[in-house]
Amino acid sequence: MSTTRRYSRLSMHFLRRVLSILLVTLLSAGMIPLTPELAFGVDDEAETLVEAVQESKGEAVEEDDYVQGVTEAVEPLVYPASVQAGPLFQLTIKTPANSSLFYLPTCSTLGFVHNGRSYDWSIDWGDGGTQHASGVSSDNDGIPHLYATAGSYVISITPYSSTEAWLAAFGFFYEETTTGANSLANRAMVTGILSPLTPEMTRTSDQIEGTLPAPDNEWAYTFSMCDSLVQIPVFQGWENVDSVGDYFAFCMFKDCKGISVLPDGFNLPVNITKVGNSFVSGMFQGCYNLAKLPEGFNLPQGITEVGDYFVYSFFLMCTSLTELPDGFNIPQNIILPGNGFADGMFYGCSRLAKLPNGFNLPQNITEAGDGFAIQMFAYCTDLSELPDGFNLPQGIVKTGSYFAADMFTHNMNLNSLPTGFNLPQGIISVGRDFAFRMFYSAGSPSFQISNEFTLPSGIPANSVDSFYQTFLLYTHAPVQNRSAASIIGDCPTPDNSRYTFDTRFKDIDYIAINWGGEGLEYPGAGEPGSGDLWGIGVVTIDVALVIARVVTGGGMDLTPAQFAAVDMDFDGYITMADVILIMRKASGY
Image 1 (cartoon, helix red, strand yellow):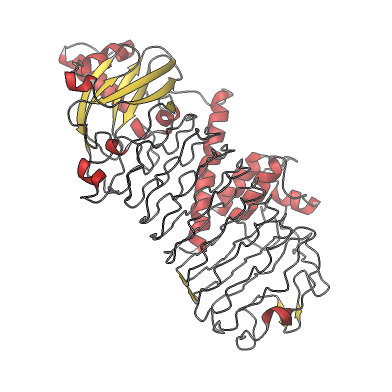
Image 2: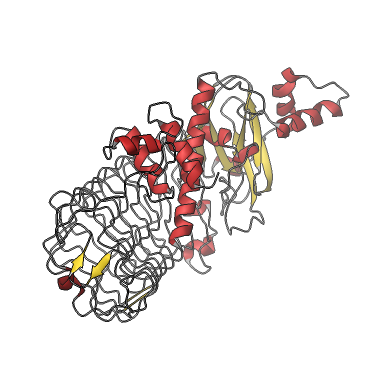
């Protein structure tokens, strides 16, 4: 995955979230009228449902007939004896107004091919209404129910017939749409999941016993973008499960901004030893109110084999996360990482100040794919120290592109590196952008590049952009007490240029980056209202993230020129409105 693609995706993700917050704010202030098109759940699909009932009676459709029409459009529930003894899944919702339509989502992402998963459920809607519903899940499908009175309701689902994999159709599709089960308004009504998640809900007995492969995308996106979700379930009964498919919990709680804590006992299946692609990638991405994880929460420590994107973006933009539980770690017996290993794992965790003792990358790795540890701690602006012994795997001899690129970028409170921390010295083959901007804009007022840190001597001289801006430290980092020669050693250099190491190298004995007697000096700032914070002629997502932190009371102090450059609306203030405008410009809008 290229750095350009990642920044583009992050910018779009951040822009959507900021614009969503802005829309809610404007609606609350009455600055935008709440029309039927914007109202929670009152959409064309509801009207079609009511019209079908009324037209069958030869009656005119009236707006007040929504409740009666929806009630008569569904099959009355008759509980068979098997249902009464069957498993139960419960969720809570809160409807915002009278006559609110809620869709129980059947937008399962199992397989990512959207060819449908069958369901046959008995539903108790929590308001006295009951229903037997059966069908096949689809991209944006759901079972509608109209609540006459605003309030909180507990919805109970039980399997009507088969009790194997009976909830496989439940969940939200991964895209945002404007109507139906997948609309943001519908997701916003979900407030809690009361039932634990068990293997029986999504697997057949053969899959549980291991005679058939576990399903892919088992809980992928299931609760994604449920903004009001505050109570999440635990995994229960997974003790004997030793295998999972690809994308097991991929983006499961992505952008669930209402989650502040995880319940006691919340954990992943602990006995698995092998996972495929994207096991928990993006699981808590964008949960920016998540402040604490329960004691004992961990990745399964027995894992020895992984696919691509292991823990990719696991806690990306969890900006309230302050600590991790004691013992939390990446499984240490992994030998062959795929692409994107630990890519962006803690990206944007701006309040995470330290990691648990013993936390480390697996040390027995000898070959890394693309994106190994890229942006792993990027924008962890409060991170001041790394645990003793933390290191890149020193036995690595071959890497793909972007190895450790941007790994500590914008860690401006980082005091030091652990003793022995170094790039693997035995490397003989790398892809492009090796250690690209590894310490870009990092370093506290006491930070020093340790005496052990040297560039590997076996790197080919034509490695594109290797070491590019690796040591471009933060402005308040001190002059370094190392010479360029002591870091470069006998590492090869390209023909008459130093692009392999850094565009600002002048000669073998001098680097104009925070050492050799000169501190880092940004070019200044762009024109007023340009969004060009650094005066580099372009506007990037970095600027929006930095200014968002400034708006919320943290981050850097702006010079008058920088203030003027990011005052996008020229009102004399720096607000989230400016952040939105910067995001739009960075995204090409």
